[in-house]
Length: 154
Image (cartoon, rainbow, N blue to C red; front, side, top):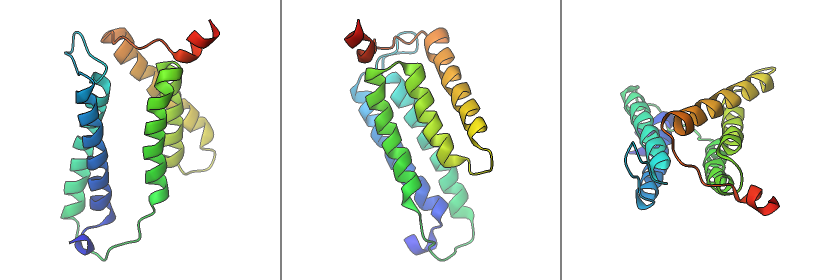
């Protein structure tokens, strides 16, 4: 079966699995409702988007002509997954905005491979982190936990 699937389809199956894991864990944290989101709201929403985008890529990959199984480079995918787990750890110790910026910086550094990429990576990371903060903190008014790092110094 895997010999008929391209790298897009196999990679999307991996990301569907990751998304389902985070969705289940987010549900265990209590999702809440839109007006009063719980701690699992953000992970479930992000995991749902990941699964939906991965399903789209899976369908696209399955519609391509069958080719021999290519070599898959797992280092970038593993770094992306590890950075998401690192992000969860960072959320407890530093602020949402800074930890989201760090995650986006890592992910954009994996994604963008062109000359003079660092200004673009910094700009995109800052824009995504700021947009996420505006949506979740300002618009939806999601309560974020107080960072432990700040409480240590106060």
